[in-house]
Length: 461
Ligand SMILES: Cc1cc2nc3c(=O)[nH]c(=O)nc-3n(C[C@H](O)[C@H](O)[C@H](O)COP(=O)(O)OP(=O)(O)OC[C@H]3O[C@@H](n4cnc5c(N)ncnc54)[C@H](O)[C@@H]3O)c2cc1C
Image (spheres, rainbow, N blue to C red):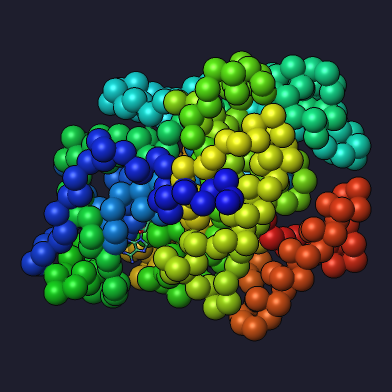
């Protein structure tokens, strides 16, 4: 029997007896100053920041399912200050702005911590640092250079040789590591989202769950949103719908929904913990193109996810796509290869979530309805922290403000769009295979990947 045979198909983070009761759906007609569509981190932060900017503003948040139904309740809970899906991606794409972007990222992280404090949100936020593990010689070399780069930028980062990395976390597959001690944390994302929803309500935001918006139309002086039989008239709209089918056509050109899969184990006994170490509880990941990410939960389970990033033809998003046995089987196999000491451990939870991949791997913004609506999408798998910044900028844009943020090329520019189907699907499959080949070939990037690199195009999770 497989180790995940008894695993429930539900995000561990949301499978709690103290999950809050859903807010009532929108029924009947209503008006507001600002409507926000999507109850993930982007939407929740947009609602909180809008109220903090102007407490008199009448803000309504509409969530199609329940708060944290999307990636926000399904992620690994790795909190990273980077706004650009990591420093190397930011350096490659925005070399002239990277210092400012790194500073804004740290300020954004401080803003998150300050909010947790101010609203007494207990989301198991732990400043453990992040451990990157190398399993191939070329990865060890890259980590050593990366540690240097991080240190030059004032980030506390230490390169670990094989003995040192295995003292932190003992896998026979590791040959080196890097421990980045600042600019990150781990969190329980479900409790974070629920805490933010409570904070938003306390600030006066009206939240409606089970309220899917099916249309958004331009009206004189604002917009009209349809939720079943109900209509909401808003002066301004922020769209925070991630990789879900968008209400604004332009988003579909830039964003592809990619399914990412996760397993969570039963809690580790003291003996099992001792067999692997992990005294410092760092968030951890390996550094191949197709990478795993893993961490301990508050009750000492291991969350293990990543590697397979599956795109379904036609930007498909549907609950049936979350149950992919081939991927859970592969993840389980990789888990026991990494930690053979844990043979016999079983998984209690399995799930998948949608990642809004765009070709530059980090958030992008846009406006619609002559500037009365703004969106922030495309976080590509690193949005737990950067969604707050995404929301901040979306508010700037929808209010027509000129700020240090809206002047950034990062904010003004767009990624290259993905081609329409069937080229979209074919291109992504080709790229996934090329990334896999590179991982098996000492990281050497073949012709296809080099051509994409030159175009500034890519596929990541
Ligand atoms: C498996 C997985 C692991 C990840 N791990 C990490 C990680 O460890 N660290 C990290 O930084 N990032 C991670 N991410 C990415 C991170 O979770 C996301 O970037 C972030 O949560 C995005 O938040 P969001 O609010 O933009 O989108 P979401 O959380 O997806 O929220 C969008 C919401 O909009 C709602 N919605 C959509 N359409 C409508 C509509 N028409 N009407 C009403 N509501 C609508 C949806 O129901 C959903 O709740 C991961 C993602 C996944 C899927």
